[in-house]
Image (cartoon, rainbow over all chains, first blue to last red; front, side, top):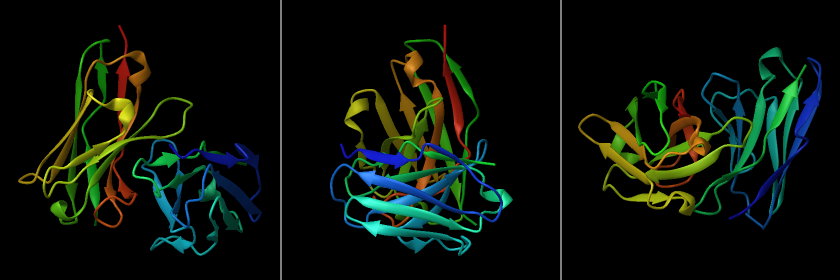
Length: 106
Length: 120
């Protein structure tokens, strides 16, 4: 199975900050990388697919980049509602695998 | 709008089975596979498998071979997941989710989750 490694596992930030989260795949996965936001008690929310395509309705302060094995999620201008855990997922392989998550805290 | 509404929390004894439901609306059920994902406390999400309601085909993680059964009822736009021979390691929140593209990409819309506790 393709292993997904996220870093950092957690970070502290303030409203208005620029935040960068990275995700590394154990093998090349082209651009088949997805980012989710998860707030406890809520359904996960799709943010970005195909590494850099913003899901409809997601604010433009979220952006994604990367290809191959290394990917980045950037939040430009952190808002109070963005404090959550973020996960990457690879859909290159039939057997989907998630990263370990990055918890963004105040 | 797209909605996936899951059944309520379950408490099971080790060795038992659990069957969860996922009632969908707001999209054409037979056009999209439904994924099942779980997240145990303190762990990363884990993909279990998907079912294609159009033909009943399924694909599941080899880790659950023989224990996982995915079904669907197209007359009710509902997907079901049954997991047998439960152990404490199956304690998790279980989610169903609609595929983004149709046939086996990754989830876009998710249900609210069903907590399953396995304890004697």
